[in-house]
Every structure is written in structure tokens, then in C-alpha cells.
Figure 1 (cartoon, rainbow over the protein chains, first blue to last red):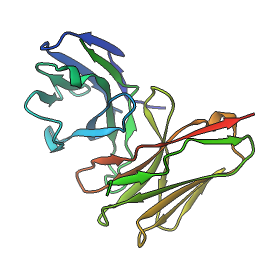
Figure 2: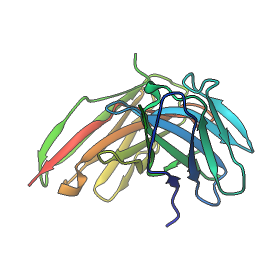
Figure 3: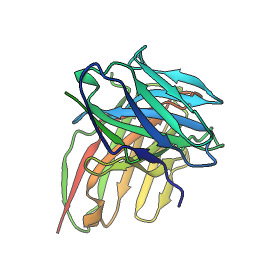
Figure 4: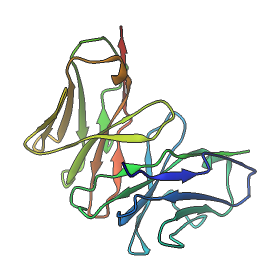
Length: 115
Length: 110
């Protein structure tokens, strides 16, 4: 069964450093998303991406964040200058053509720890 | 009012019990509704989409009441493997953004 993959599974970085989180969505999907979950809190939407541009972004997704689909398979989330409060689990998700239903499938996540 | 609100839990039930989860949402324009399950420190996994007419998948039954902005999930004959956090999720707009509830933890005991 096709699945979303993410690398790395765990990333430790120092405050102020740049990190890039990588995702490979399900191959025939057209819509891509990033979510985050701070420990003990609910899953929060960050950004959606379709047709090589951002469709929607949340208040969390400020100028420190960017997304890119550099080739036909990868979808990346970059945080330019990490803060302690960026420590969280970051999930990538993708959904297929039937956008009306919008069933999104999640990757296993990258645990980001900012020290 | 929270965008998606769920029973706080946790629910502790014996194997074989029937358990019901309730959820309300605030945006009447919401279009799609889902239940996901999340195991500890893992990704949310889609359990089922929720249709206006209600739908069933084996031991799981989901109901939607648009007038009351209420969604439910019923698990019959619960198994140890059903132990997880159940997330009520709503898609509010065409952009695809999913809005998650806080989740209700279920623990099924032998």
C-alpha cells in the first residue's frame, strides 16, 4: 500500500540554525500539507500546497517557514532560524484527486528538537 | 468556542465493550468530516470518513448531524488493539486544511 515517507525521523538542532524536513508524498497525489504537533497538544495545520504554490497557510507559518517541491517526488519544509518553540513533531500529508472528500494520509513524522 | 471539541476522556473500558465518542464543530460551512486514530507518538491514521447518511465499517459506525454540528463514532466489541487516541477532524474549506480536535484517549483492558 502506498504511503507517505519522511526523513529524518528525529532532528536535533541548535536555536538559530536552519533545518529542512523532507517528505515523499504518495506518488499520484496532487495536494500536500504540513502539520505540527507540540507534545501533549493537538495537531495543527501549517500549510497546504498545490500546483507548485501555497494554497493556504496558518498564522504559525510565518516568514521563517518555507515549502518547496524541488522535483517530482520530494516536498520539503524549511525553517530558517529555529526557535525553542519550534520543537514539535512535524507531519507531512498528501491527498489525491478527489479533493471534495480530501482524505489526507500522513507520514510517520519528524521529531524536531531545538536546543 | 473551540473549532472542534471532543469528550476529554480518557475512556477505560473492558474488552468487548461498546464505546461512543462525541464531537462538535463550530463552523457550519465545514464540508468533510473524519475520524483518525493516533497511537502514542505516531502519525494520525485515517480510520474513516463520515458521510451525511452515516456509515459503518465493521465494528465502527460514524454518524454526522449537520443541524447540530455533531459527529459521533461508535466502536462495538472493543479489542485491546483499539487502544489509542481518537481524533475528530473537520475540513472547513476548499483549501484542504484539516482542523483537529484535542482527541479522546481510549484504553481497552483485558
